[in-house]
Each structure stands twice: as structure tokens, then as C-alpha cells.
Length: 485
Image (cartoon, rainbow, N blue to C red; front, side):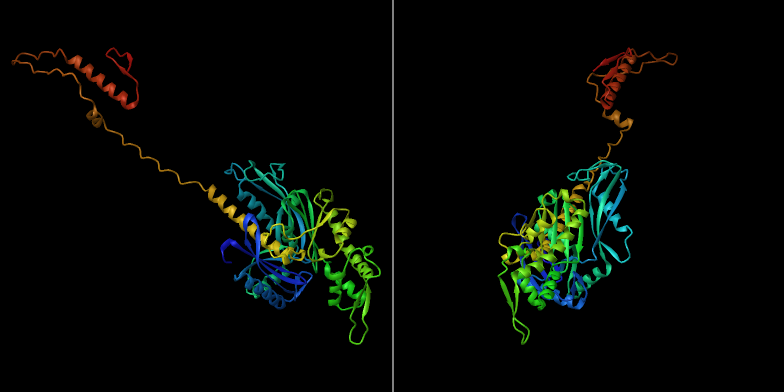
């Protein structure tokens, strides 16, 4: 993509719509959406790509609209994935820290995570995400706020939450995107993407259950102590509610969708039984009148079924007592009136509606501040977080790279004995001159009386010089006694 790390594109391939978001960095670590395109989704059923050609055409339309609005060509995208084929498993892994590592390094953590890709999976399954749950060093579990990098130890161990998906469905997504002339920069589980848009660090730390009610699936992601602990995708969502209205009121699907979005409610007791909606009849048939309370009863029955499964998944995670931030509802289904109240009544957990404005610039288009766009906006935020993480990792590698050692000074050459004697200081006193004695043929030379004294002075000078050369602080005198300099 252009502008290096300044632009990220998110592509939400949903059951009812395909939406493209082009995001740009703004001030204060915020994101500004500079391009947005949406088109009805064709070829997708319950989050799964069924018809590659139809899906590719829908992708092209959405991306072209966003690209024209932003004035930037799009080549790479982050894509969301959902569908009932998504599953998760728990696994435990460990690595031995090499002896040359004084403490755990990033490459040790990376190795532990990468080794999870070698675990045995069911046939036709591929890994989408690997989430470490905790870290254990030499049998002692680290608290969540302690980074294992920098901790001394001989063994690193962790429990993992691993998200998998059907291989063929993943291939279909890749083929659809590539047929639209794009490359996939990353595939992200949709509830994780939505969490980036509607949650903050406080929510994740306190414990929160994100429930994204889309058109074909209801996606759940549960966080605790800042870590994602449980994920699942339910095959029931907004389309199931629409179908119930269509069958119960005997009207067209488009009419049922309009009734749901414009007049729908999850609590019949909050709707007057005297309110009547008139639906145009088919051809010569008279208009059909539908009570709003009847409509609310149909919506409540199906929505309650979905929320009961959500409650089951929360209990299944064994984290229901740790969800202090409650349930956050997002996605198109979260727009139903009184769904917050019905959720609290069904689960007994505090609930709020999550709008995707947590990380958006204040000047963002109000049209996109809608629960139905949480996944698409979350994909953009996820992309920026991933780029920041890679940049931080590269900086750490550069910082840890050892500097080139300074060159070792060449040792001074060892001087020879002749050179040492040549450098010896000249005696300040005049040395005695030795004269050859006058002799005759039968006479012997006379002894030099100064010879012993001159030899002692010479030895004293030599000892004094070598003392300076080798650091000896003593010299010898004629009596072989040591005397301090």
C-alpha cells in the first residue's frame, strides 16, 4: 500500500454486506477513516464464501467506492473471517532455554509460539490465531503484567488458546480477494477485530464478553486480564430473526427486514398492542396488518434463543464470575430496540452497546459510527497495531545488536639489549681515563686502581635503568643491599 505505514485497509466480508474501510493515522494515536465503501453481499452464506465469482464482484464494488473516496489505490487488505466452521482448542507447550541465553529472549518466546503450528489438527483444519494464556518459567507462573523476555530461567512454558478454521473456507476467501485484484495482508477472526473497535484496555483487563451479532453468525470473544480466553461462532444471528418474521407474518423477506429494523423490539411488554403496521399486499391481495406487539413477540423468541447460547458459552468458559466489565453487544443485531435489557434479563450480566468510536478521530463521518461497522473498523485498527508491533520488534533487534568491538592496540615492539644500552643516559661525571702502562719486554702491566670503582658505577647505572624500564622501585648497591629510589 502507499504511504508505507500510514494507510491500512480493512475488508469485512459479511453475510449481508461487504464493507471496505481505508484508515489513516491521526493525532493522539487515533485512526481516521478516509475511505468507505459498502455493497450487498452475494455468494456468502453464514460468513462462509460459497460462490467465489459473486463474492469477488461484491468485493470489487466495495473497494472501488472506498478507493475513489480516499483517492488512494488499494492493493492489500486485512480480511475478517467468521462462520460456524471456526473452532478453538487448548494446548500446552514448552521450550528449553539455550545455555548461552542468560535470560529469556524474544526468540525463545517466538520459538514457543511457532512450535504450536506443528500440533496435530483434525483433517481439513488450519490455524488462524495462537493466543498465549500465561507464561511459566521453571515451574513458576508469571503474573500477566510480567513480560517473560528478560526473566532468567531454564524452561519456558505456556498454555495456548488456538483458533482454527476450515481449510477450504480459508482458500475460498483468499481466492475471492485475489480474484478481485487484491492481496491479503492478514486474516483476522471477526470478534477479535470487533473487539479492537469497541473495547479498550480497561475492558480487557477487567474481563469482558464481546458479542457481535451479525447477519449470519453471532461471534463471541471473552477477555480476562488483558488476554483473550475464549472464542466461538454461533450459526444464529440477525437473518434467523428476519426469517422468523417472514414466516410468522407471511410476508416477503425484504418486508420482514424492514419491519425488523424500523419497528422491531425485543420486549413486547414495552410496545402498545394498539399499534398496527400495514404491509402492502401482493398483486390484488389487500394490505396485511401486523400488530407491533406480535412483531416484538416473534423477535424476542428468536433473540432470546441466541442470547441463551451466548450465556451457555460464557458459562462454558468458566469466566462468568470474572467478567467485571460485563457484556458488550455490537454488530448489526445490536441495533434492535431493548436488546440490552433482554440480554441482562437472560444472562444476569450488565450489558452495554459497543459503538466503534473508541479509537476513531473526532472528525470521523457519523455514518460509520454504527455497530454494524465494528468489524470493518476493527480490522483497520488491528492492522495498525500489527504494524506498530513489527516496528517495535525491529527496534528491539537493532538495540540488542552488539556494537563492533574497538580495535586492539598493537603491542609495542620489544627492544633488543643493544637498543636498551644505546638509550641509557650518559654519566654526568667524567669517567677516568685508562692509560696503557709503559712496559718493557720483561715487565708486567700495572693494575688500574679505578677499575673496581668504575665497574660498580656501571652496574649501578644498568640496575637503575632497568628499574625504570620494568617498574622496579629498588636498585642494588655495591653491598647487594636494596635501597629505595
